[in-house]
Amino acid sequence: MLTIDDNENDLLFTRIALQRSGVDFDIRAFERAQEALTWLATEPAHGTDLILLDINMPVMDGFAFLRAFEALPDAQRGHAVVVMLSSSSDPADRHRAAQHNSVRGFMNKPLDKDTAAGLVRLIGPR
Image (tube, rainbow, N blue to C red):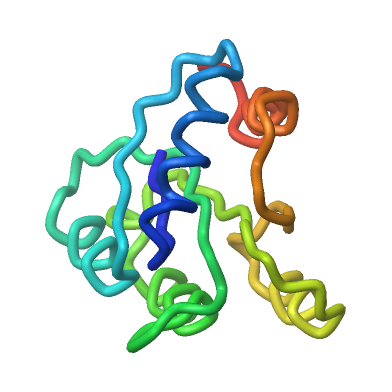
């Protein structure tokens, strides 16, 4: 699993919720979307099944990441699905996220342990 968020505290709180969920998530965190994209493109055996993605980030925001991610060859995307994890309450952001084939959900921060445990149903058997 990848978590992509420019806020170090949000990354920490998300990691804690994931660890407390009771599901054995292997978590790799990135503060910059471009770094996550580069890692996905250069690690062909990354095995990433889920990406938790913030929307509002500098340089490359969540929607720019989605466009670039969906443009990657299948081998580089793997079977990863995306869940937007944002503080945005703008319905336009939800609608915009839903237009992307790789997006399987939209959740508001902070992530809690019960919601984190439910993420496993989006990625299938582990």
